[in-house]
Length: 264
Image (tube, rainbow, N blue to C red):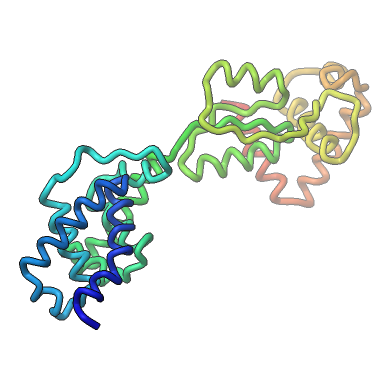
């Protein structure tokens, strides 16, 4: 295959990388054109041991890192998070994640060691997490599920503005601080209601157990707070949760975590 044909075959891949790197196709193509002009002046490099594809990317990289052909990159698509990365981590991330180059080849393109490339990729991950992180409001009336959601959200690097159990609480919480994302149960149930499906009854029993453990309220006062139930219902709920804790270590840990948060 003629060298010009081999170069033409790889151009779509280089253009894709250039667009992702700069944030738009016009700017990316400007770098690609300059890359081709540089190779036209010294075509011998295309026949070197690196091969045509790697040579194209190496030449492009040298130009992109040394010549500003466009203004500060901008993007109004999901690419904006990648474009916001600092230059070297951005290049490392795209070469491996988008172009699927092996790390050794990507390191060769950037003219860095494999160890340095790995460090750059890790840095890109941290920067992406910071860019994407947002404030999340959780609307969930079952305490155990809400706690698990909160832990999951925070483990992904996001912040939790709060947990709302009812529509009224959700509106008040959103008014206090507008979230970037809302995780909502579309069928909220009020634990103070008279409904008794298992999905509501068990969380309600946990809430009664915690009320008995953490407050000075009497059995009658706690029952009244949960829809006018009598003290016998509260006793039954506390006994059931105590029995379940003895049988299920996971439940014991979850309730301990809820208690810890309520005591803050």
